[in-house]
Length: 267
Ligand code: NI
Image 1 (cartoon, rainbow, N blue to C red):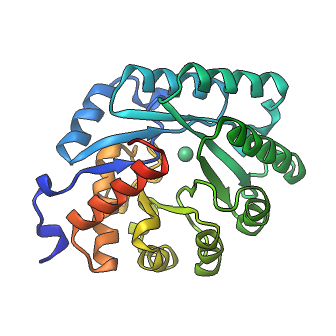
Image 2 (image 1 turned 60 degrees about the horizontal axis):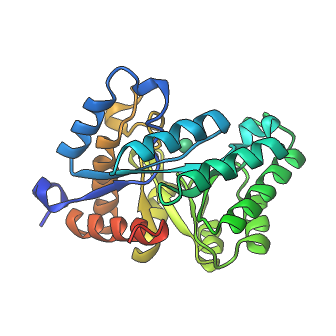
């Protein structure tokens, strides 16, 4: 059976990375959720990128039963990091225990290099320590910095729960991550004509390590490229991955949702 011929009712999908707290969704957030449900997307994880978005993400996850959140400082916001921000993130996580389920997105970004790599590394490692203290999984942002990111994680976070979100590394880097027990998150770029490398990764990830995501409002799938992304479109990500893995969408939905539930300890 072709993946695309499956009924919508077959697939319950989990968008493990969507920034629904941001003002891009302020005018139609309820409609965005309704369209997601109509596409079979029933669960959401809203990561953060600085202190303010951490507050918003946590608040949204407290207000909704179908959405959990993460708190953290993105490498592009590394300048704001310090003892006060660390204490504030810790308090947000403790105040919303069970709704804030991870630290992220944190990591290294050598594409924009908004902060010096040395500063980024300090902020990254200190947040890994915070995640360890709170016993929370980690969501990694990594851009053009896979080797440095993996060098750090192999020392600091081996065999602990973690996802490399919107993975854009090669097969060798994927294998290093798998060897540490990490999960691989695949998003909209898997649908882009020039993304053969991402499709090769999507084909190779073991079924028990794969999660799917949109990174809304960014990284819209090919069909909506240039427009705002939203969680309903994680279905297009799932369809493309099912196609390249020669699997049924319903099977892919089942195990990717289960993987996310286990990774983020959602029972
Ligand atoms: Ni993101």
